[in-house]
Image 1 (cartoon, one colour):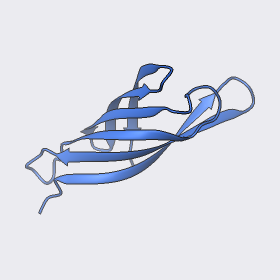
Image 2 (cartoon, one colour):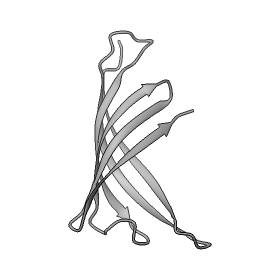
Image 3 (cartoon, rainbow, N blue to C red):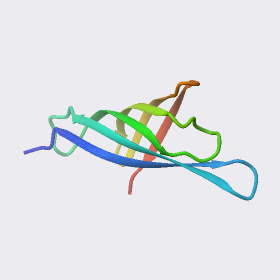
Length: 102
């Protein structure tokens, strides 16, 4: 049969190039769910939700208590688009993540 539902853990690194010779690395641990809405096994249509928490904070790009919420969409073969919200006790701001697979 064709895979229709998928639960997963993901770990994302965010590099903050602050203009000096060093950079900051922030890491999120994410729990996600996605569903394949396609009826054709050769043409998938994955859409999912992802919730993450900042597990490693460096610099001032994120507050220590930052969560992220994203909606993932597989836009084509090996390309995904994810509108996201980063939420902390200090601020909330939107972002867009574009993923490329190989």
